[in-house]
Length: 302
Image 1: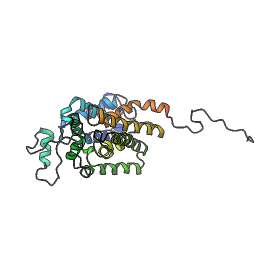
Image 2: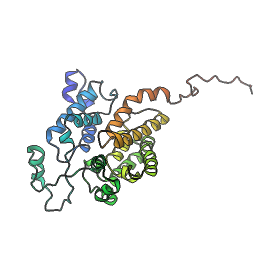
Image 3: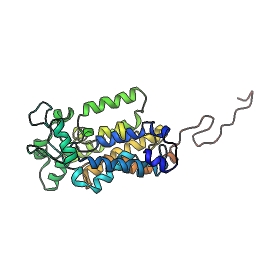
Image 4: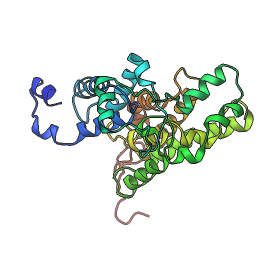
C-alpha cells in the first residue's frame, strides 16, 4: 500500500496507519487454506490493495470488499492451491506439523509425508450429490455438528470454529463497531431457503445447521459483509443487502459451480449497493421520507 500511495502521489503515513490494509490482509488470511504457499497470500494481498482498493481511489472509494475480491481472483486463477485442504489434527498430536514443519510447508512446499488431504464438507456434499449418492449417506460420514462447532474440520481459519466466530461477531455488535442488521439478515437469507428446501426435499437439500456451521457464513455475515464502505448506509438498505447476500450464498452453494458462495455473494451485492442506497435512503432531519423539506406550521394553526 505504501508503494502504491507513493506512486500515486498521495500522503503515505496517514493512509498507511489507518489499519485498513492490515484488516484486509487478516481477512484474506482467514480465507486461505492453512497449507497455502506463501506466494498465494502475496498475490492476493497485491490484488486486494492495488486493484480492489487503491485503483478505485483508496479507503472509502472502493466498490468491492478488497479481501473478497482477492479471494475470488485467487479461486478463479489458482483453483488447485485454493482447494487443497488437510485433515485437522490436535496440536498435541505427534502427526501435527511443528513450527519448522510449518515454515517448510509454507515457503518450500514440503508437505509432511503423513499429511492426510481432506475435502471440506461443502465440497464433499456437492461432489457426491453430483455422483448420485444420497444425502443421508454423505452426511453420515462427514457431518459431525459437535466437531464443526468447535472447528475440528477441514477448511480455512475463517471456516472452522463457529462458536469463536460467533463470539467475535457478538463482540463487534456489543462494542457498536457494526450493527446487527446485516449479520442477522444474511443469516436469515440462508436459513429461510435452507429450511424450506429441506422440508420439501430432505433427500437433496441439507438443513439449517449444515449451512450455518459449514463454510464461511458466520465470518462473512459478521466480519465481511458489514464493511461500511461497500455496504448500504440506511438500516432498511442493510437488511435488504444482508438478506440478498444470504440468499445468493445459499443459491451458489446449492446450484453453483463452487461449493462456497459467501465471497461471490458479497461481491455481487457490493455491486448492487449504489442501487440499494438510491432506493433506501436514510431520512434526513427536517424532510419527509421522499426527501421533501417539511414546511413548519404557522403559529396558532391547528
